[in-house]
Length: 76
Ligand SMILES: [Zn+2]
Image 1: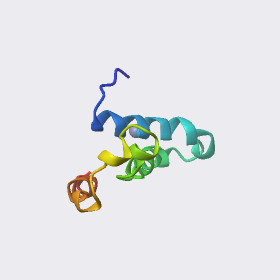
Image 2: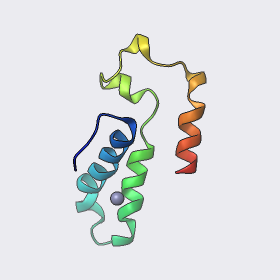
Image 3: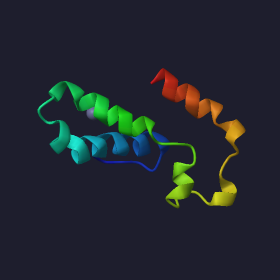
């Protein structure tokens, strides 16, 4: 995958790595394939980029700015 440094590709990477990482556990149940990827992708919390050092902790938006992210996840 050719990735760009943006939120969409950050989510896609987690989706794809969710497939790769958990495949040995669910490979007998192929119908779970996309569900596993999506479960990992939606597990990205607003705090996660700060926790892994992508965003400075003092530049993290406050929790009242989470509505846009939460609405997008709900629509996805
Ligand atoms: Zn997938």
